[in-house]
Length: 292
Image (cartoon, rainbow, N blue to C red; front, top):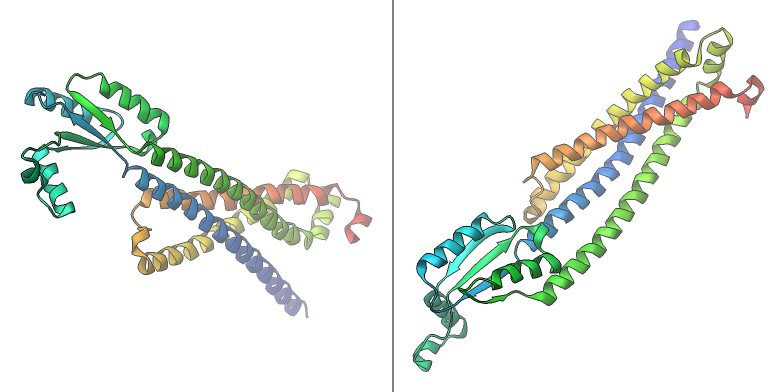
């Protein structure tokens, strides 16, 4: 009879642990999806920013040595991602292909100028920083004009800031919901053992002695839940990468590693804190209050 009861209790305990792990895993999986969206949004934003170019038109009397010096300095500049030199002949050829007519032959001369295109690093694509770069370039004697799409940069910066604000707000709200849900699962698990906690306390066990095994077990459950969520995220990432390869979900393993590490850290931290306060609550209750 005792053996059957013990088996029944063990089955109930395993079932309770399993439900906690699955609950934690599902919540962390959703947090991971949100984190993935945030990271990919940032990556896509940087991709679009780095498509922005500044075009430097050079004076016709600029010497080749001065042009080479300018190009070398631009390549070393902290804001530069890449530098492309476009001669007036190349520009004329490209423009002729676009309009389908040889305008040089029509005009009798090539009115275009030699130019240098600079692709900027994403962190420098803001109205203020680009205006400063333009100002520094215009003081050079060989530079005739500096152009870039100012309205586009202002619109891009405004929309990115707005998107960043809402993503941050949504991330904070979703993380709070995740903490509440995981905390509820842990509290229910501890609630089922409240009489055991009080019995140990009545026979003289200290609060820390009672609390440590519960915290350790919850940390294990949090870690297992995090592994479940990571397995689900890997399957999700592989599916999305196969279905929509343009998103390049597997191009940055460092970011994915950071995401997975954060999920494990959240799983352990939230379960540890929740267990600490849940056990503390039942340790502070009187025996007659355990029934409510």
